[in-house]
Length: 321
Ligand code: SF4
Image 1 (cartoon, rainbow, N blue to C red):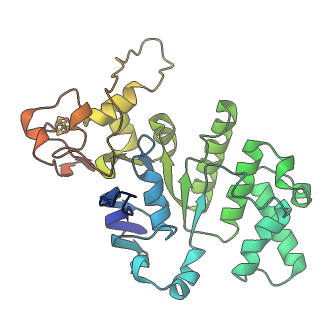
Image 2 (cartoon, protein in one colour):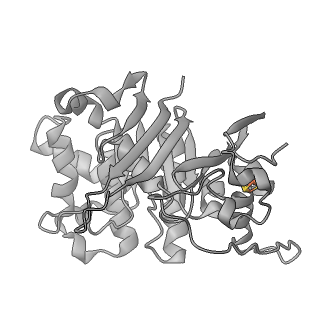
């Protein structure tokens, strides 16, 4: 059994009527996603901005309401729990946000920010234990104990993300949803934070759902990857295998945009035409068909299901073997 088992998750946002009284419609941000994350496993969720990956991450943590589906965590459906019943579960799953600065209270010192979660969940008996735990957490993410008395604005972006990670770790979660945690950082700092997450994941047996637009980063960090387009999964599988032999035309296009360091490896860039269609009015048939370089007649009328191809791979394309 997976630690986290998402079943047919839908997050739809109804729009209000406009001033002319026209029906507002429904934004299908997430439209039937089924995905599991095993204990101690890192799974990457990849796609362009607007594909619904951040909304899915927030729905898991109940930060946005679910329209339908199950969020099974250790076998319990979190989607149906009352806010009170959900409270004891909250420490088991945490989130790291894209913008580390806005996720930290500027009026609290770093030590107070980290201690807040320890106190809410009554994880420390008193001040001495709290201080010791804060120091340990700071050191576990590569910061120093004396950083506890400083304020967030005194740190660089990479250091703030380390503080965010320390705060997430403070409640000893089993799962961390990482929402584009390095995309706002310099490239040199990105690698340090990715390596830190990898070390922590291995040392603590953490499960990660790593949301990113960057397939190369996901391949480095994650055992499995799920590719999302317009609210749906279009390809899933072992990250290395998918990165080497992507089967869905959308994954192939994403991968073709990743720079290659080895001069002997050549990759033909696939430039997708047009923008991602609006989730308010998704195309009929395959949602990718208006941009797909391999589109056929049936793609315009038939939705390709996410089919199991064996060896842990699933693809939603009529042309997949
Ligand atoms: Fe392209 Fe058709 Fe496959 Fe969709 S089903 S990805 S349009 S080939």
